[in-house]
Image 1 (cartoon, rainbow, N blue to C red):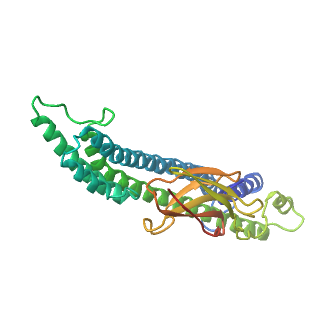
Image 2 (image 1 turned 135 degrees about the horizontal axis):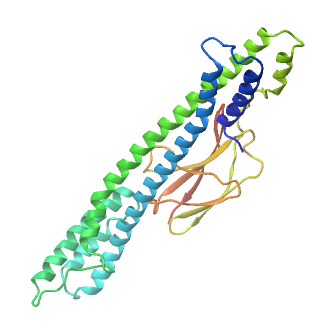
Image 3 (image 1 turned 180 degrees about the vertical axis):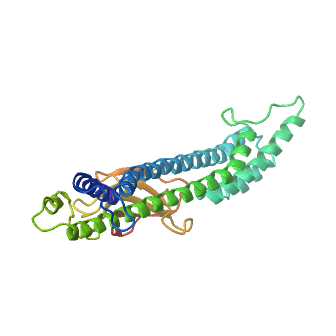
Length: 310
């Protein structure tokens, strides 16, 4: 299924073909055959730059999610192992209970529990170093507290990286949209000028039949979500109602974690056959999903479908 800019690109190619064959010296205002050829070809470049940047955003999100999972897992595994390692009367058992009062169900609470875990872990290491004979530093599956400290320090950088790359993606999308609008307008200007320049019945007029002018593109209809089923601990399996999304040139699945995200900031390319997405940092939270159908006239969202993560 083609994107909005691709239809403009193909019409530009058709326009260039007729223009080159019959009257390459003709100008339309400030637009020449050479400038229109350059602009039309650049649509492919701009689309590729956008797609490359989308991949960069996805890589940044994956890095954030991987780091967050490490923090979350160590925060849960540490008190389990420590509880078994301590003597029954050790006063640090009370510290473990306090630690567990922080439920790591959002990125912020994962960070809060990580800070508390690092503090307790360091105290445990101090206690072990003072033992006679000294005990080695406490580890969880071979992982030392330094790794958790590094993950916590890195998380803010990883979050900022996502926002930086998202800003670049927005810029790439707008550059593509602006160029597509320019080429579209010039395609239509050329067509009108060509009709006026050449007489009815001429070969030049007949050549306009090569141009696929199409009709006015209607807005896309909504593609509704059929089912959304949680696959614990962090996945959601979605299917879609067949037959929706008429006139759309692209589809996205967007979602937000209620009480965490202000808007539908998470997205994935939508697979009409159904798909599984991973929702990080949403334990115990409600997640809202929408299917978004888009074409050159704009976007249409489906009704919101919600799930509650375990």
